[in-house]
Amino acid sequence: MEIIAAAYTRQGGELCAHLIEELSERGHACKGYIFARYENSRLLPFDDLEPIIGGAFEKRQALILICAMGIAVRKISGFIKSKTTDSPVVVVDETGHFCIPVLSGHLGGANALGRLCAEITGGVPVITTATDLHGRFAPDMFAKSNGLVIADMAAAKRIAADLPEQKRIYMYAEGVSFANRPSDESVIITDDIERARAGGIIISARTVESCGALWLIPRQVTLGIGCRRGTPKEQIASAAAYVLTENGLSFAAVKQICSIDLKKDEKGLVEFAAENGLIFRTFDSAALAAVEGDFCGSEFVRGATGVDNVCERSAVAGSGGALIVRKTVREHVTVAAALSEAELYFD
Image (cartoon, rainbow, N blue to C red; front, side, top):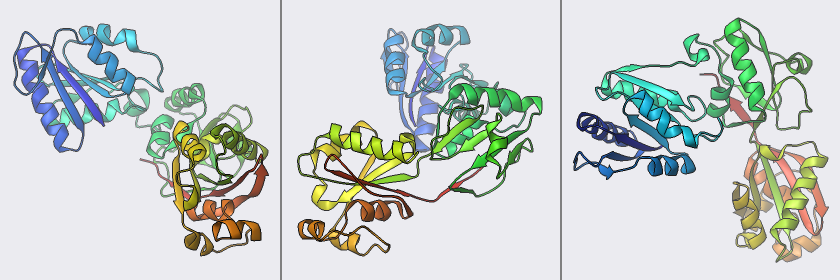
């Protein structure tokens, strides 16, 4: 986690320097600031904290503000936009006695950071989120811990509100397994998707039609892609979107795209992956030929690449899982999809 810590007083500055030293030793990238009136060789001076806060929010860096709560609230208020994008913010008093997560407690990790700060200072973490207070399942934390995409934050908030009221939440999962079982007895894993549709949780890489459930999307789809030299990213994106839509798969479920190493510098593929935050991997012809399975072979493709099929074989090679969409040709782009196994766990 990238962390920006700042203090307004001399005593707060000493605590700030101690915190960033300890957090750095725990593997976090930290930078500390102190109000310019007070000199501290371990901290950078500031006259106006708002530009620093604005930069942190833009990069979604965590903020530790060592000051009065009122100061912190006023300083961050102009930058707050969305629960899914706001920086995690923790307020610590200058003695280190209270460490209070203020913003983005679950998704941003402020609750965990607040606990860590309290561990360092010997203080008290002041956690105010209802699911934490009652020891209940938190859908946003479950999603974050398992790399799941939340399709609808409103549904996540509704379920989080229901759990403290002792309501049962049915969870249906497709194509994934569980390493353990939920400690919260209100969360019930079911094989009946209709139970989950009625206000529960559905975990699936496949598109879930609008219903009362919270849809969580595991990033377990690998797209294998082949294309002509010079194919633009827009054409590749169009072909990928077509294949996903036609097969009822969510684009949010795509983790990576794979191809043959002849395409490792293919501009369209590289740009398509980068713009969508996807991993781009390539394999040589020998590695692709060694992949076991029933593939749509082509002598023309073999003559050009050294292997009879690129998209299906690279999808399976990259995912380590099963082919779920066979070779589809769209505007001179070939696309296939494979699904990797996913194991989820409850904290």
